[in-house]
Image (cartoon, rainbow, N blue to C red; front, side):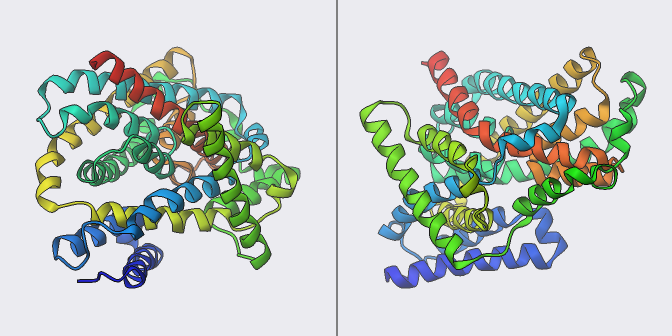
Length: 388
């Protein structure tokens, strides 16, 4: 058994590196996603008896390292860039986010009476986690799940269900515009034209947004400043939670978003790659805390709940968008930005040959990062209040 803290830390880092390399190298791994891969690696290590059930290393990763991941990923959000999304996209994304909230709350309340004893007490936590991930993405999934102390077995099952439903919804948003186009207004002309080609003045901002999403070169000074800044914001959030009250993760989210808008912070490079690495280290520990028997026992129920959330999201998003006379192409990209995050919204716009919706979809997805923690915790508390 790997019991030495140093060896255990090296093992977690190695699993993370392997998952990220596989995602970068192979198409099948990109479809699965590095996060689910590293959860699986951790689960294999744990179920094979190669790593201990508890360790200070796990506590450090699930505590400080995960908080740093939240800060670094939120530092990629530029609220000023939301102007590039346009009113139509922001309106459609607002509908999609609200539909996720209603779907998660409604599904948790509807399923709670019939869930098994292992899942029923945690239904309110699942509502929060699913709201977070289907408003923003993995960042919000991890932040809300950790704040609510979601059990590892449910965390792993929810991560697997999330990946499956995200892939299913990607396929749905590819075909729904074809099937439903006659029921919606025609897409605006700008949906067909890339802003990079048509508006040179916006091109630097476009490239900056995409660079933050896909990764940037690391510079030693920037990395050092980002580490010091993230630790400082974490200390400030904990102090505010202790003295003023409230939830530490919400203070951290707010402080990180405010810091991200400052010009000196905006010039720093590397926040997103650092955040991705730290977040996947956390996912390895989630896998280590999971047991295959526990995941198998709760998995089907979690999957049904997750599928219900996405189904309600889709019905409400496309239904309300039609009443609001939004075009189906914008609606599909906004929905994908909520369910799959900014990268899948970007991919959908390109796949649908709507390059003019690529940047707006990306911006909408980054907005999801910003609001996902607030929405996720609000949904959890609402369901907990109703269920008692």
